[in-house]
Amino acid sequence: MRGSLYIISAPSGAGKTSLVSKLIELDDHIVVSVSSTTRAMRPGETDGVNYHFLSIDDFQTKIAEGDFLEHAQVFDNFYGTSKSSVEAQLAAGKDVILEIDWQGAEQVRKLMPEATSIFILPPSLQELSNRLNGRGTDSEEIIARRMADAVSEISHYNEFDYIVINNHFDIALKELHSIFCAGRLTRDAQLQTHKTLIKSMIE
Image (cartoon, rainbow, N blue to C red):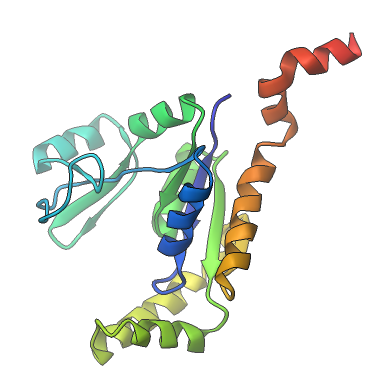
């Protein structure tokens, strides 16, 4: 059975990364797409695990060949999602997650409109601020910028198919997983898996 493509977006601090990490531990049919980048590999990173590390020339070639579902330039580096890599995982029966922002989601929808999109929200802006401050890693200036970016990101919630509010982690995880489970129970998905059985009941 072919897998399905899922887009998951969220403002910084909403808990997306933690939820997705736990989700793929919970369900071995779900994988996260590994993005490509032109930035230098950092200590402890592995090519093909953290990112697919490419030269700028190779990245530009892939753009010209139409191999990116979405791509963007962030300062001096390029980031993108390989279409061929995602297609291979889908063909292998995996549900593939793209962890991208609303702009990347917009690009992906144009090429793969069948993708299911999920937006993760914090329970409130105050709680989001508490979480960002609780990390203890950013200055007040950076946190203020992240909060401003978060408000801008959240304004695009209505472009997504599902909304999960991450107030209580375990509940949010169950809600997120239920979206994937329901996707495997649609008529088309069940026909892929049980075509012979279903036909035997009506012929």
